[in-house]
Structure formats: structure tokens, C-alpha cells
Amino acid sequence: MKIRISALALVALTMACPAVAKGRAPQAWQATHTTDPVTGATRCVVTALDYFGKSRYSRTGFLYPVIEEHPDHGLLVGVSSGGRFRLPTGTILWRVDDRPFRELRPEDGPVTVDTAVTAPAGTPQDPVAAKAMADAMALTNRMIMSATATSTFAQGDRAKEMLAELLAGQGLLFRAKAAAPETGLPGTGMYRVGQFTNEGLRPVPLDESLRTSLKECAIPTGD
Image 1 (tube, rainbow, N blue to C red):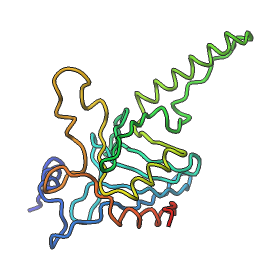
Image 2: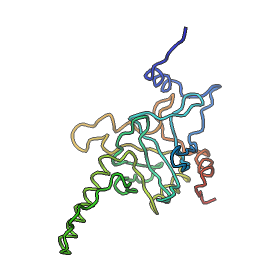
Image 3: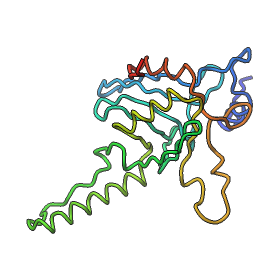
Image 4: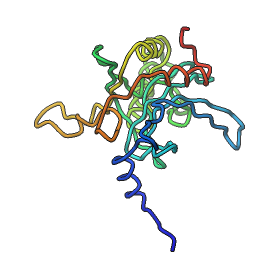
């Protein structure tokens, strides 16, 4: 008789015993290679995903750290939502060890073409009116990015600073800013940080697997 395990049961098993056989936990970070079946474009990203035995996976409703040397946007460091159905990430609070936390906003990262709003036909010729319309379109784009983006990244010099912190650190904590209310009674979401282990939530380890995975994706580590 075949035994079927539901997705919920698999998650429960994962949270209860995420370590691999013989008590050895897998490496925290891993390089993931993908190839687009239509365009043929290849990507390599460094992530710290959930694991069950030797299998790696992500879950809908959970956030995962991602590092990538993007062909168009350069170095990206931040967070992406996981699972089959990607949810908006919003603003992220990010901290390495006891350093001051960083606030990452989705609208500060790369803007994708499919979410950008362009000015309608008949743009005013008057410079003041044209600037007002351009500012309105830019604000609309930022609002759309903030509400719908399924990843939140830093880029440029800020991404380089964050990567240097990761390489010099011991543990990473992050969460969605909206998970904790700014007023009123505290919510349980503020404590949902780090990585699930058999000992509960722990900071994501910044171990040697991070440096190894970065090299596999040809992302400079400063060595």
C-alpha cells in the first residue's frame, strides 16, 4: 500500500527534525543554478533555504536571503519570498551580529519593466506640468514596487557593504518590517526571525558555506 504524506505533514517533519542523517546538518548556504527553458538565460544565486535530509526547498509565506551577481543590475543582496506562490516582501529589517540594523525597501532595488508605469500619450509641453507628471509616475512606480514586489534587494555600494558584513559576521537575522506593529501591543511576528532548526529559530549561520557558494557563483569575496 502506498503511503502519501501531505504537504502539511512534510512541513511538520521538517521543523521537527531538519538535520540530515548521522546528526550532521547540511551547509547553511548553497549555490543554485537555473536555466530559463525559453530564453536560455542562466542564473546563479546564493541562498539559505530550508532543508529536509539532503533536499532543499522554500515555502510560501517564508522569506529567504539571496545574493546574486545580476547580469543587468550588478550585485544584489537581500530577501526573496519562497514557495510556489510568491508573496510581496515589503520593507525588510536586516541585521548581522550586533551591528546596527538596516532597512531595505523594495522600491530602492532594481525596477522591473513589467511593474513600471509609463506616462500616457499627450505629455504636457509645459516644463512645470511635465515635471509634475513625471514625479507622479515615479511615485506610482514606487508604490507599485512596494506593494507587489516579491523580493527586496539592495544594490550598488550598499549591496557591497552588506556582503562585506556577511563575510565578516557570524549570524544573520531579518524579517518583514510589517510583521511587528509600530504601535499598540507587540505581535508574535516580530519574533519570527532567523532560520528554523530542531532547536527552534536561530540566526542564519554565516559559515564557510557562504564563501564557498559565492565563489561557485563567481561573486567576488575579496579574497
